[in-house]
Length: 468
Image (cartoon, rainbow, N blue to C red; front, top):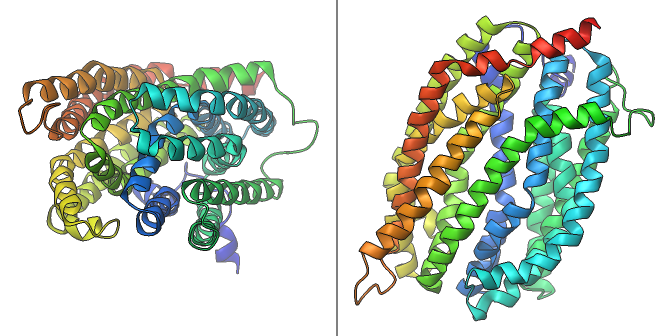
């Protein structure tokens, strides 16, 4: 019983063997990320099976816009997670309590902004992206429901981020698994039985995300041994808000940059026709699962680094970086091999159309090796973020996505135009992504080795606050 209780408790990552602590934290985080990916994947499978390939294309076309307008919460979640992990590592109960309270109120304000602005921008953005008329109404309805119900998504990410900053990745996993099962059940009910179409899957996801957010809040309310979450703490602290935004804004902008690049490339993808759009949706769903270990190790390295920086244990940061990166590269290598040899089986889960399966497999094989490069990028970026340097990963993302991927995608498409492919070969989209991933890993490695991130350790200022 005590062992089970320990699994759902905050975890001190400043003690024990670094690689064991990283793996213990990463496994539930990975399972949670896989479960979260099931949200969109379940939508795609159910839509593709019950409605058709056009509906599948509609769900995929809405994705980049949805990601772009939700980056506010990504930024707050990253900033909050870094501060929570460092204050927890420093055993600073007062600042830890105030940080969590500030995040809860800050999220309420940003949720309202998204609920108002999102529905106003959804259709104009879809039109700007040359979304085919046959799917634009479905895309608009899908986006509007997501935006109006964005509070559930927002609070889950913020509160789960706080739990992970405390070292508890198991609770967030369990809550997400429960909501994933609920999401799949509601998907089937709304689409298969109520014939709600594409908006039905959006409504199912919104409800499931709200449930996971409520469960995370209940968990935090029961962690009184580490911090205080009462009415006096539920207010915006100007200084802490500034720090959260300063830390989180670069990460939010990184996601915004990535989403803008995706939107720009989505416009190119749309020009290739509905089959390529549908194939891109399938590939991105599989890609989402393939990326999960990389993102999970990256997040684990952020929490590990944050807690150890707060505890003044930089020796453990160096040791943990070597261990975590080596394990992440090994996992990504195994995934790459599986995709190269068994990718066609994954594609058949989404569609029975032979041409769509064949094309999707060919495109996925272009991307496969790139996952190894992303493993390096995510782990080293996670360390830099955990130490308080969130700017460097942002600039690297800016260079590789806007400065490289978009021009390469359009350039290759232009150079490969022909009578058969009047707008260029669709491979251009995926080759450009592979190139940007590879270059990104090399640039990240170079900046990490320079060590400038060490000079931006937040514990220097955090330490003064604790002493004061």
